[in-house]
Length: 402
Image (cartoon, rainbow, N blue to C red; front, side, top):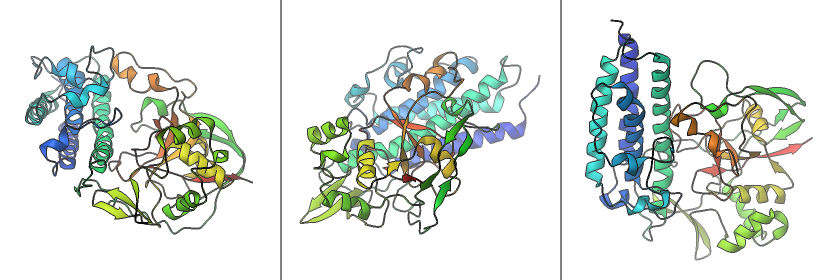
């Protein structure tokens, strides 16, 4: 019998434990009530994230690869499946906040049950247990990265939940944008891209999502890229100049969004006695003018760029220019629609639903944010959201043509 090497097994097990423990650490200061709220459809309850990431490991690794495994509860696939049509029926996304059952205690019991069995699988698996070890390792790697994605969603969703509590409670969440990253980039050195043909996309043997694959060449014009993200002070100038009241700065759809929702400032900003405050995990705080503006939609980012007489980078410009500036404070809106790279192919089965089917009506964001788990960012990483979304840690970087 050929066993998987002790070194590989130890590495798998250590990484699995670290990722699962980090998810629990994000929730360590929550009360039971904090776990169950769903104020909008985009925001899932913390309890659901804990269950869904556990369901992913159970469904795609334990059920097919651990002999004799019995699922924890027959209803949990229906409860915690997100969008995988291949797997079966599921609770509507808008109904996740109605799930008073299973309880938080039961969800943690589910995590313990799955963790115990997956640790058993990782310690005992042999190359003769399955025909294609490559398939197993790819699924395991996706499982690790999938949970890290949900760690970031946990942070952003909890901020929305707590930030819409009228008491604006201070709740320490790990990680926290207030202390995880140094947001003050003092570099004024110009960043240039020379006109030419460049290669875009993931390369090498490291992990990437399928939407990063299909390395290809693109033509880029000569441009000058800002080495810094737009600050709160700069965005306030846009606001004070009547930026939210002047339709000339806005795309038609964005202007409709501003009027319909009466948008006057970035998400979490509140004007109190003539001064701007914003919600953070330390509670309501005065807006720091030197920090990079955060929680803005694509509409707002684009309108600000037009007001400045500049524009947002394309995702291809970003990937090339990012080799010359500090990134990772904010997800940066680009002016690129989320589309497949040349040669993109969808994987077989449920895993093929991971990215490809969302390649419509969304814009690409590049970089990472203070909420992104360590080691979960790449210069080729393609995040994507609809143009009105603001609850992620999104910011603005501008570019000018020569």
